[in-house]
Image (cartoon, rainbow, N blue to C red; front, top):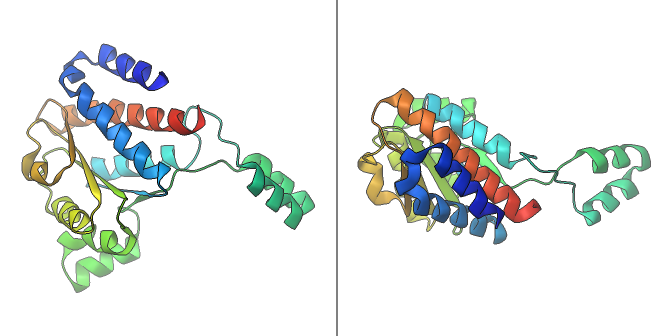
Length: 212
C-alpha cells in the first residue's frame, strides 16, 4: 500500500513522469525481488550519473527514511562477543540492502583503463561482482555511454536483470534493458533533475517493502 502512495506522490509532483508509472513500479518490483532472493545491486554511470550511483548506494546500504535496527540474532551475537562494544554496535548499526557503486574503486578503474580498455571499467566489475539474480542499475542521460553499454551487455550475459535510467530516447542502452525508465528530455541537466526523484522514490519503495 505504501509503495502505491509513494508512486502516486511522485507522479503528482512530477506529472511529466506519468507515462513512466508502470516502468517505475516494475523497476521497484525487480529490485525488491532481487533483495528478497539474496541478490545485490550494481550501479554505474559517468559524471553526474556517477554521483547518482554513489547516492543510490548510500540510500540502500543504510537507513533512508525509516529505522533499520539490526536483526535480533546479529544483535545477540555482537553482545556475546563483546559486552561493551558489542552493545554499542548492536544499537548503532543498521540493516543494509547490498549495493555496490562501480564508480568508486579508483585503483581498479585506472588499472582497467591502463591495462585493457577504459570502456571496460564497469564491465570488468560486473564480471567480478555479478551473479545470476543480481541487478545492474545503469544510469546514463544519453543512453549511449560505451562503458555503461558494455556493463549492460556483460550483465545480460551473466543472466542479470538490467534496469536503465536514461533520457527520453533510451539511446543504445534501450535494447539491453529488461526495464527502461526513460525520463523526458534530452538536455543533460534537465534529465538529471528528473532522475533524482525517480531513484529517491525507488529507494523509498524498496525500503518500505523490507522495513516498513
